[in-house]
Amino acid sequence: MEIVDRKEKQDLRKLTLAQVKTFLAEHGEPGFRAKQIYEWLWKKSVTDFGQMTNLSLKTRELLAGHFEIRPLTVANQQISSDKTIKSAFKLFDGKVVEGVLIPTDDRMTACVSSQVGCSLTCKFCATGYMDRERNLDAAEIYDQVVAIKTQAEQAYGAPLSNIVYMGMGEPLLNYANVLESVERITSPDGLGMSPKRITVSTAGIAKQIKKLGDDGVKFNLALSLHAADDAKRNQIMPINESNTLAALKDALVYFYQKTGNKITLEYIVFYHFNDTLDDARALWNFAKQIPGVHINIIEYNPIANAEFRNTDPETLARFARFLEDKRLSVTVRRSRGKDIDAACGQLAGKVPSLAVPPTP
Ligand code: SF4
Image 1 (cartoon, rainbow, N blue to C red):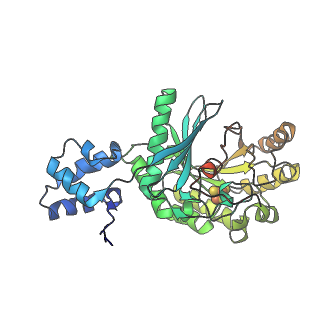
Image 2 (image 1 turned 180 degrees about the vertical axis):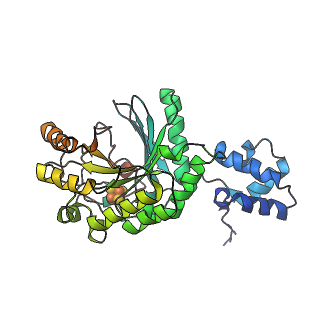
């Protein structure tokens, strides 16, 4: 039997600039090449060493002999009649995550994933019915943004204006890689976007929200609230059992005091579950404790796995009006991509390499 030594090559993008410099020095190459290589990797997003045309052939061969650049490819894509584009991205190991381009009159927003699957089992979410398989690394998150940015430019002739971390996974359970991806997206050596254009969304992990405050992040934060009553929230988001509304309120106030960054509460209005005026009052009581908060009231995009339904337009309007009358800052967001599998986790679930358990 032939035994083949298949030493796995390291992804070059896992190295810091300083590490690339050290590698070059160890192989007799000048240090200034590191910056050139970094530009090819991050600013120009090349996927092949052969494309690094300002490096000598010898340097390119040296890199190719030791490293690889792990690609992200589009495995499936759907375009909605409202122009939303949803992509299933295949990672180097065959796993699949989702990213969405959401075009509106005044912005082009990329929604990206932070994990393959999710461990948090929110009952209304298609991803919540998948196992968490692994975290994405910073380059895999960054590549989704680059791919969606290209879609915005090619399909709609407009630059990407905003990024939300609201795809598959809980970003704060992949803390270091999410922060590193933001660093790359905002760096002049990367995409050079403003952190004010980035929102990281969490299901609510109080300790990690406080850590964001301690780390002085510059991006905005969204909390997927969906119920402002512990008993109700426990039913749809089991993470609430260990991160109660009181703990989340303290963490959000702490985050705001430390950073002054914008905080949004996301609230999906489910038919006959959280859509009464008593529910709106509970939301008001929660929200009024958080300085500068904004509330997004969101229509539900139903999934096959769960029994939840979208509430009717009159109830939705009455719910929003109650909050506006209390002088809260409120936006009602229509559900996008209703004619495609735009709810988080639906499209990836249709790519055969990613198994989705049957309807519970
Ligand atoms: S809503 Fe977010 S945190 Fe909850 S299961 Fe879905 S992906 Fe995970």
